[in-house]
Figure 1 (cartoon, rainbow, N blue to C red):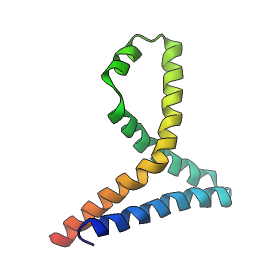
Figure 2 (cartoon, one colour):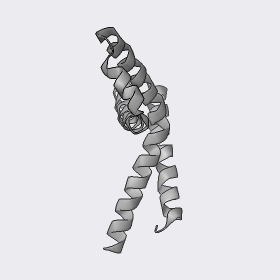
Figure 3 (cartoon, one colour):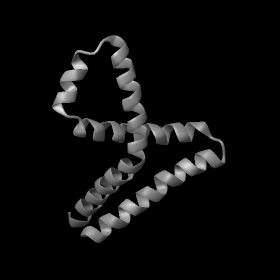
Length: 106
């Protein structure tokens, strides 16, 4: 599984696993599984949004009143959940692929 082909295979597998778990949680009506997968997606989506966040936006957020902070955090949470559905499989696939390559080479 060395090279980009192996990483692509691991990434595709992680997409199938994460989206499959979400489908399974919805199909069998098992909320804890869905909550765990969505929490994982929110984590990776939040990190992706932090990487994209502009310094100007950061300065604007600092001067927001409490209500503005609440609205900002709710919107960021919802965006993180949506973006995380796509970012999480790629990040996990890359990390698993790197670990697998490391263990195959050592």
